[in-house]
Image (cartoon, rainbow, N blue to C red; front, top):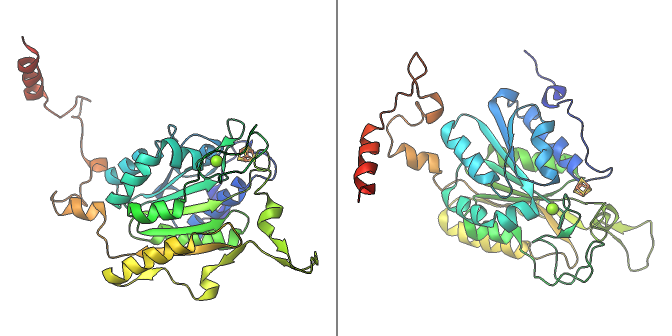
Amino acid sequence: MEYKIADYKTDVHNDWCAGCGDFGILNSIQMALFELEILPHKAAIFSGIGCSGKTPHFINTFGIHTLHGRVLPFAQGAKLSNPKLKIIAVGGDGDGLGIGSGHFVNAGRRNIDLTYIIFNNGVYGLTKGQASPTLKLGMKTKSLPQPNVNESINPIALACISGFTFIARGYSYDVRHLKEVIKKGIMHKGLSFIDVLQPCPTYNDINTKEWYQGFTTEENNPKIRIPKMYKMEDEGFNGNVNDQNEASVKIMNAIEKSKEWENRIPVGVFYENNLVPTFEERLQSRIENYDEYPPAVQKIMDNEGYPNINVDGLVDNLKIKSSP
Ligand code: SF4
Ligand code: MG
């Protein structure tokens, strides 16, 4: 059967606000899956809570809308249960870098082969625009009574030091570029992180679409605009590493490149390292036939539906421990 891009879409009503950057990210994910010929039943998309949490409803693959800050545990569990599935985790900046930050850091040291995309708009959009962990110090978006009193997290730098092995940034309304970045992230063997900058026209009245479109030249000629974003690949920056020594240099470069927002914002792949073993490969070295018989294909009940796991010993043990 020949698949079309329409096969990756659902007819679920979409209630995102008009002009929301989420639409560009949604389209990019659908196009990336289609162009990589990952069939809908071979992929699963997980989300946290927030506006971006609705994404799995709009993509015709397997998917679960999980809990606030808990998307990575679900996504990692799914991948370890069924390593043949392509797994994408999505969530907001508040979800992933606030309540979910512990999972973010610890996912980095496992390097499970999945792609995590953060919809980064600097606010908690679903709950009326409170400052999220990526909103810069001193910024006052329209829901805030006072300028933001907290310093912001730099997601790229955090991903670098946590151990993510593919780190990139895209912009939601450069769909052609973002789609290519997502494709690279999906094809990377290991844990990929993609920070996607997206306008929230309803609550972030500073980092708007117009703001991202850039600024005029010194002569203030409105016809000559310098876009905020520049593509690192256009400047010959290649995040790929070929040996471990090179990796540390590239990590430092990635962190350096991520210091932006004053003037220009780099997008593209900051860092890719294919030399680090995945968690699945480490499991395989300990569990015989893990890749052939992962949990998803193991038999868990007999023909009459009774579990085939004998827990008698465990129950006896518990009785002994709980007896006075
Ligand atoms: Fe998008 Fe912001 Fe509306 Fe949420 S509140 S749907 S992020 S524009
Ligand atoms: Mg947000």
